[in-house]
Length: 435
Length: 160
Image (cartoon, rainbow over all chains, first blue to last red; front, side, top):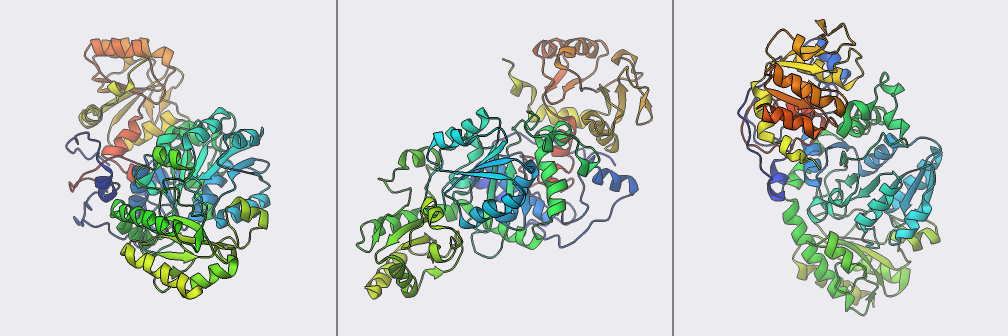
């Protein structure tokens, strides 16, 4: 095999809007296809036995089997890694699968995780039950209290976990502060950046080591596909003595020392070549294609999402039937300084409020809306509404609901890109019918 | 504090990669699990002629291992270094003495004195970068594993 002796490319730092269209893809050299081809194939013909061996030994970057890599999925992975400013990405069949894989790659039985208590209910379940089954200890902390993070650290602590914007209470993470506490204790910070997307916030720029997305939400943007992705900065020192599972010779890969051998790319290599290989939650190429279609308009959609979200939050704030509007983008939000620092382009489009009349009042509102869609998702271009206490956060105890900011009358909104007057009109007529 | 960006310019990296055909790897190990072995194997696959320089090895990839750069019997385009940073100034002097084109220092192999020695003699210096990764970024398949190549281009060429 000989090198492709092309013409050197000029160095340039391209803008976000350019990268959301181009990063990770060049025109297909065989066909010239400008759109990303959907490589609907399980496997790849090897050039010769030596090449096959080199791919499986990770001596050469090569396609072997679509559970581990796929050219369409690779475009999606590189695009999100590029937008987040990471060394690379690995995609998964769902955000939850991505999260489990990111943790499994660095954890062993007996380890300890420190996590924000204000998480998506599905993440709470995964941490509370699945981690316990793996004999991993867990401490929930109030994400707003730096001392709580500090005090939760134990000798066996391996990672801090939080969301950029908490679901559904709208806590905004002080990423730089929490990352520096994590690094003081030689552990990485994982940030779930689903609600902000890389357009509104790039946690790696503030010190986060790993970023996770449920691509199902704003990245896909159209509610068509389930998927997730893990992006790593590539700067964390996995050989600091705390992570033998990453740094020591791996029995699952013929003694390879992932961090020593691959350096910047060591964690990502292990995440793909071992964790994805063994857990198997691979993203389908068609779903990667649909996510890529979404990413092409990410900045445009997010501008509209945050504009509409602020308008709907402002409408609710002055409405007699609504209270405790948690949109962190409101001028009087207690998260205002953090929003100005981390989310200058807007504080996302998902928030909650307390509906007058408690549980019944909330359910009546949902019964009476005719434009907002009642379903368990966020980040669709269409506006969505749900009652967390009876759905997304249903498995949580009262104390956990309180910690997650969910009360009996709490309604969660995901504000879409419709004409904003129609969104407030629908809420107004639903409130009126419920009175 | 050394200004590493000075030794990581993308255009210089591409020029070094595209114009080289011989690479002497200082500290190349015959152990298949060592990073130097991964890089040497990869470069050989991609058409470079690889010359091991390591007094502790007899041969690597079927090539005799030379005790020092001055023993390499051909003109060397790139000297690629997998050694402790303290060893770098002496390697830089040898690189100058054999008139090699470039001194390439792998991740963590950072030494300012060595960079100055090489630069003053007209040798191109790349530092704290991996030769395999940079090759894979610009002319290889690094993209296939979801890594951020940071490349943006509409040109139809090479491998996608």
